[in-house]
Length: 337
Image 1 (spheres, rainbow, N blue to C red):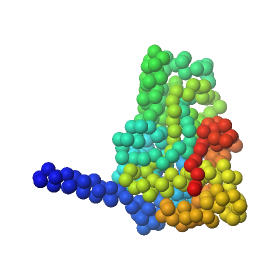
Image 2: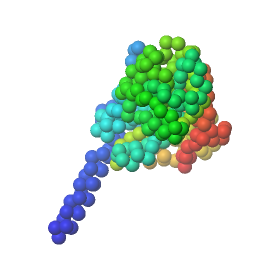
Image 3: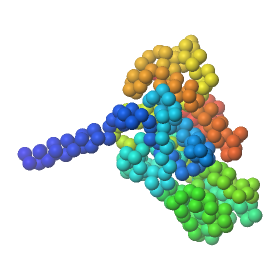
Image 4: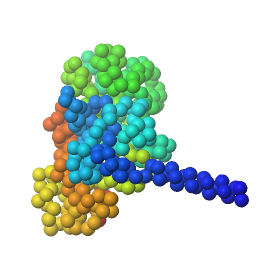
């Protein structure tokens, strides 16, 4: 009997813990905004201007969630976080969602009490070097001083790469992203390593960006995406389907400019996405125009990509694998049906 009582108490404790974590949507509605964890400044992904206005594809995800919940994409507050701080801030409830160029890995998915809601940028780790070094390949970097950021997948990846290729290196790591850039720009390091999208972004901060080049090697898979706490499936679904709505909208040709006029399109898939057929908003605990609000106020995936990281931005990143599956990439979202 004592053992049974202990078991019942244990189950009750687990259920109580789940109840504490559940209800993020209600908490967000009560305070009137989404608290979004972002980077400390990564152009194209999450970056603030001098007036404190945040932009980037990760920021657009946050704005999309706000549009889905409130019908107003502006109802977001941003918490800049270092790589080391980000998971603690999410686990503790300081933020509602982490949208901060964060790699989805098994360890993070199974050991931190967190769930990745999808991938909004498929990336891979690379190397940035001064062109004056004359280095053409990462295999020529034996003995190099390598700048990196602590609390990231970058450190293990670069260690594995040098070990696999029988080379030595000296890791120079910092907690603050701008400290890494400053150390590299001052010549303290021969190489700067992080995700290739991050290299493109941080390169814009260097004194002479054109004096540096990204080497051809890609040494890892880095699927980047938004993260939420485990234990609240409703909030997880809202964040996941915010991203899915933006991807599906691109595939269907629904944009911020035409979303409202297409709400009554003859295409049943578009009608379901935009809320004029079915009750898909209600299934998320939202109004039926949840996706219409996302797309009309934030845009589809292509609009966000082109505005912040595309070929006509300082990052000059082509779509590559981040193109739709129907256009040679691997970007694919489940349907609304």
